[in-house]
Amino acid sequence: MHFQRTAASTAVGLAAIALTLAACGQKGGANAGMGGATEVGYVVAQPQTVGLTTELSGRTSAFLVSEVRPQVGGVIKSRLFQEGSIVQAGQSLYQIDPATYQATYNSAAAALAQAQAQATAAKLKADRYKTLVESGAVSKQDNDDAQATAAQTAAAVAVQKAALDTARINLNYTKVAAPITGRIGKSAVTPGALVTASQATPLATVQDLSKIYVDLTQTSAELLKLKQQFASGKLGRTNSATVTLKLEDGSTYPTPGTLEFSDVTVDAGTGSVTLRAVFPNPNGVLLPGMYVRASLTQSVAPSGILIPQTAISRDPKGAATVMLVGAKGPESRPVTLGQTVGDKWLVTSGLQAGDKVIVEGLMKVRPGAPIKAVPAGAAPAAQAQR
Image (cartoon, rainbow, N blue to C red):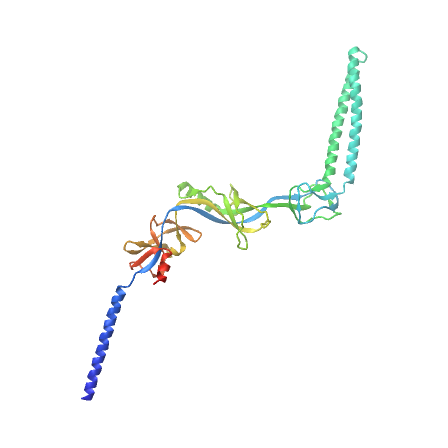
């Protein structure tokens, strides 16, 4: 009897525990069904004018380049500059032995003086004969000969003046001058070297680096697509020609440049066109031959919608979708994306003005599940207070 009484008590106790657990389960289920909605943050889609930036690669080149070559031949007597220094236009760089050119100049000057003396005598005689022929003191033939001789000697003076000018020019060319202002490189010759007029090898090279050209390449397909978008009205043209530059080390060049021109022909080998920009280079940071990347605004989306990149999801096929705050809860909608603009995507289709795009709490959102939508930035704060 004692055993039966104990078994009965145990059975009653287990039944009570089971009832208690069932009641707790029902209470928990009721609480789960009445739980709070997921709090999410949204941004409102607003059409705006968006400048579309294109990033292109390119190389730098000097604004002006001049190869220094001699205009006369001779032996280099001295070099008059320091390699790597800044030289001014007209500054003497080399001195060629001027001895033979000085002698030629002196000879031409003497020949001119002789011709001028002969011309003076001939002119005086011609003037006298011109007066005497009127009175019959000299024959007409003698007067004609005197006039012709005066003209010949005057022409001889002109010839000698030209010879003297040539000799002066050649003598001046013995001082090889800098054609432009800029930084000069290493010298290809040393004193004692023999040089010739207009030789193929330059004596040195001067580069003006106060400004730098950046030659950018864009594929002809991209340019054609851009023109088609202009023609269709999808994109507008920008009045800005500003270009920003990113250097090889990833840093941004502090001074913006301007777009100079776009090439009118396509390179047959690469299928690309060249865009040339010019940048101020007061501190000499940019050097010829550097690889750079440039960003320029070539077009404008007149009614573009920008949304944060975090708002974009991908379906199993890889198509872009966004989650919207709908009347009955979250709604998934496919969108078409353009290019990135900073930390945002440009949406070209799929969104309308006023759509509320969920950008915070997306990982917790499921279609049809209850949500509490607040403007982006307020959701984290509200969740932190819970």
